[in-house]
Structures are given as structure tokens and as C-alpha cells.
Amino acid sequence: MNDFSDKIVQILNHGALNLALSLGYSLKIFDVMDKIGEPATLKALAAATTLDRRYLKEWLGIMVTGEIITLSTGPTQKENQEETYYLPPAHADVLTRRAGNNNLGVYTQETPLLTSCAMEAIQKKFPTGQGVSFDHYPRFQQFMSELSNAKHEQVLIQTFLPSVDNGTLVDRLKKGIAVCDIGCGEGVALNLMAKAFPNSQFLGVDTHGGAIARATESAQKMNLSNARFKGLDAAQIKGDKTFYQKFDYVTAFDAIHDQSHPLSVLEGIRAMLKPGGQFSMVDIKAATRLQDNLDHPMGPFLYTVSLMHCMPVGLNDKGRGLGMMWGKEQALALLAQAGFDRVDALEIPNDPFNLHFFCER
Ligand SMILES: C[S@@+](CC[C@H](N)C(=O)[O-])C[C@H]1O[C@@H](n2cnc3c(N)ncnc32)[C@H](O)[C@@H]1O
Image (cartoon, rainbow, N blue to C red; front, top):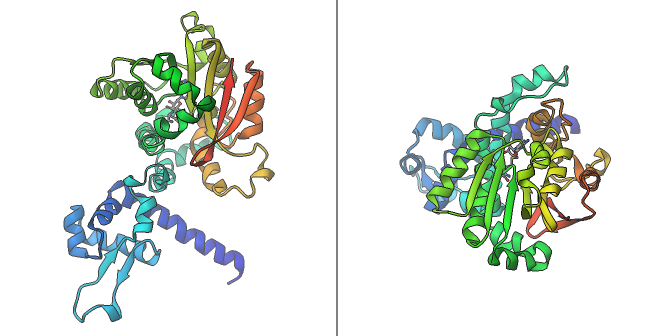
């Protein structure tokens, strides 16, 4: 076989492994094996995971040949002793829910999920250039919420907000300011902020009615009286006087590149800020030109997520379809066009995959 055939064989194996990893993550098999913490027999694993032994055996075949889980056989094993399976702690560190911001397990679900939601629609729209509606992604908000938990839970309050404006934002949040999160999804980030800063008032905005309902429910469960949510197309904020200069700080986590009309949204965000107000746009760290992304460690993965979701949803309503890999240069140009005169593109502590575009009105 030549080198390229080897590469394709590797891709076939890794694609299959991604699918099986995703099953292991969603069924919490890795979490259970991590808790067991020592080699376990198939019978013990079936009992601990409450999963079927035959299915588990086949899945373990993928995990062992793919070198995710180790199989104990041979010299160290006594004759007639059952085979045992072990998830090394170094693997659990990035595959389980305890991994926090290092959780790559949660991302293994993304390609299988987008394939099951949108493969047919993307094939249909590929020749026409039309968008794919949000309705094609019924489980997407739930997935985003899970991703959001992994991303924000141990990071947003602990390291991200303290890094904003040399730590001075946190002082203002403690005293009490008005904050809005655009494209808030199921409100994970907003509710964490509202809980941490009870003197500040928080509003989450998203077009997705189901996400807004779940965000509101979570805020109620957390007894937050300072968190509100509104179902709204963020592109409409620009013309809505009730938002005009009402906010001290606005955030958009992973949300601007999905917009059909990103310039209107950014102009609306500028309009809703009080003079001197600040905006944190957190978005994928990439370059706008493909040739500048050749060394991107997750290039194929991120372009795939973009092709299967971000770009087609952004093409709806005759939209711009920026896609997730719109890149730093295009982001800076759009923020300047929206009227932000001070924009800094900042690295985020412990987050190599995103950039923090920090803007002031
Ligand atoms: C990739 S998700 C990010 C969600 C959340 N900020 C997070 O970090 O998990 C993008 C969100 O933007 C929302 N969205 C897309 N277009 C929107 C629009 N025009 N107005 C408001 N929200 C929008 C989507 O419904 C989705 O919840």
C-alpha cells in the first residue's frame, strides 16, 4: 500500500472510532470505567454500566483495537481467568465528564449527531446554495448545552471573567451592572454568571423557543431572581428602542458566526451598550484565509462542523453564511464595520481553540 492508501485506512479506522467513542461518551461507559479504576471483566462492566453484555463486547472490540481501552490477557493473567478491560487514567482525563474544560469526549458526539441530523439536507442543498433550517437539528440545543457545560462550568467564573479588562469587569459585576448574553442557548453561561454575581441583572437572548424555555426553567431551579430570557432574533435588536443603551456588558459565546445577518446583530449589540460599555465576543480561533489554516490542529473537524451546521444555518433568510471558520481577520473587519472602534483579539487562558474579541463602545 502506498502512503496515501495508508492514510485513507487510518481515516476509516479513526472515523469508526469517533462513532464508537461517541457511543461510549453518551452511554457514560468511560465515566463508569473511570470510577471502577481497575481492570474489570465484561460481566462486571455490564453490571456497572447496566448495558447489554453482547453489545458491550462488540464495542470493547473497537476500543481495544483502537487503543483507547487496554485488554489484559497473556502472561500476567492466570489460566482460565477472564479477560479484563481497563481505561487508563490519562485517557479518562480527556474522555469523561470530570475532565471539565479538557473534555474532548463531548466533542466526539458532534460529527455523528450532525450526520444523523443533516446529512440528507446538506446533500440536497449543496447544489442550490440554500440554507438548512434550525428544525433539522432537533437535538442540537441539548448537545450545545452539554458542550457549554463542559466549556463554561469550571472556566467562565473562575478564569474567563477575571481575565476581562484586567480584572476590573469582575469588580463592576460584583457591584451590580446590566449584562446581556446574545445567542444564549439553554442559558448555561448566563445562569452561571447570574449565580456568581447576584447584584447584577442578566438577560439572555436567543431565537430558539425551546432553548429559551429550558434556560428559564434552569434559572428557576437555581432560584435566580436576576436572570431573564427572551426569545428574539438578535438582528432585530438594532431597531428596538427598549434595548437602546441599556447594558454595561454584552457577551456572545460561539454565536456570532451562526447568524444570518451578523452585521445587523453586531450593530444592535453596539446600540444596546451604554457609552463606555463592553462587549466580549468569543469565537473560534482561526484565520480567514484557508492557506493560513494549514497547520490548524483541528482544521478538518471545525470545517466539518461548519459545513454541516454553522454555514447552512447562517445561509437561511438570504443570510451571509459566515461559517465557523470565518476567521480573525473577517471578524475584526465586521466588528469595525459595526462601529466598534476599540477591538482587541485576545488569547483566552487555558483555551487554545477560541479567541476573545474584546470591544468597547
Ligand atoms: C453555537 S450556539 C451557542 C450557544 C451558547 N452561547 C453556548 O455557548 O453554548 C449558537 C446559538 O445562537 C442562537 N442564534 C442563532 N441565530 C440567532 C439569532 N438571529 N438571534 C438570536 N440567537 C440566535 C442559536 O439558537 C444558538 O443557541
